[in-house]
Length: 151
Image (cartoon, rainbow, N blue to C red; front, side):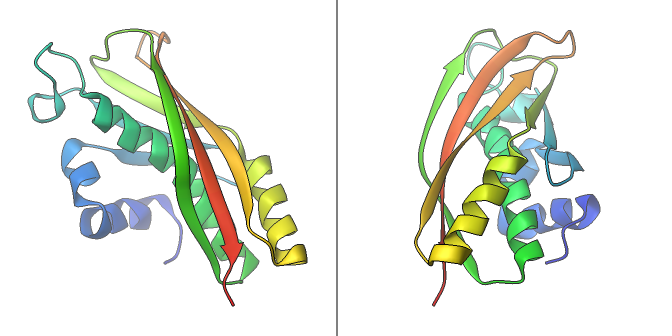
């Protein structure tokens, strides 16, 4: 899969349909940073008229995973990736447009270089912060990604 924003969002329609239908969209991607947005709508709300926590989780995970996919593709190697663990903090009601940003691209690069050099699996914790249109943090997610060179 070629990693550009339009193709990646089309990919989500076919491979991550629940995220696509909830409105999760990749907006920006490079080697250091990924930005994903999602809007609070009737379809993705909870009974308290805010965005369901799992929808926020999908957007946050995509901001980390999109960079992971992009950097794995850039190595030209066959490398598996998997979320092994995660945690989250919810600090404000998520309404309106929420933007999740992850700026941990350097951590991915280091983990991939190490797994390629040693052949051993590596883990990396990545953080994605969700802010509303006023710039207020609504949630913070941490994902522990594992990468391993396929034999």
